[in-house]
Image (cartoon, rainbow over all chains, first blue to last red; front, side):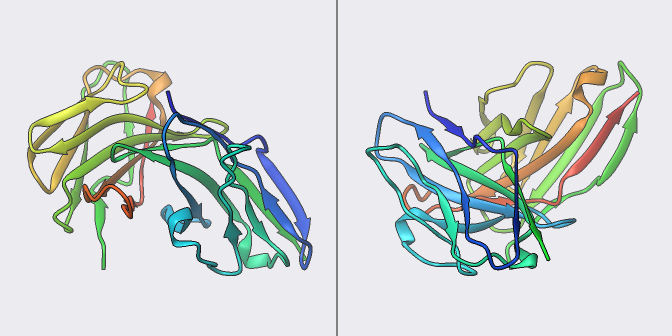
Length: 107
Length: 114
């Protein structure tokens, strides 16, 4: 069975500091992985997906199949990055989410 | 612009009441989902529908049922609401593209059962 684990419930950093939000998954096939973000009072929205290999709002995420990880990184956090972040895995068109990490970027 | 609309943003219901949560999408998506979102637990899949009248149970279907009579509309039903069903409910939809797929969410429905 597939599972997505986000070990940190809350991550607090100062503005300008590097950020890494951890995500580990268990899945027997080739996973398709995503990061979704929910800003205050807004709906959940896609941040990035691993197949696109893109950088969105300065965030990147690399799929590491050996460590079964898909950590989200940003070299210099901004206050507007404060939000709830969810890692997700897609399996046969169904999406499974982790428990989420709240990122708080302090001024 | 992609649109998933949940008609009720805030509801307060009594224990034992039957509750309907409605969701409509305008993107002609094949797949629709109901999740509940709880602090510390993240999003948990309640039910998934991949076509009209077709459904699959998710991870936590107990106490819930769903209805999909039209492609654009997916309803979540709580036959007899209980206090442990107090939560934020999120509807979502996606195409059946496989690789490259994306899921789109509604704004959520806050349900309080008293």
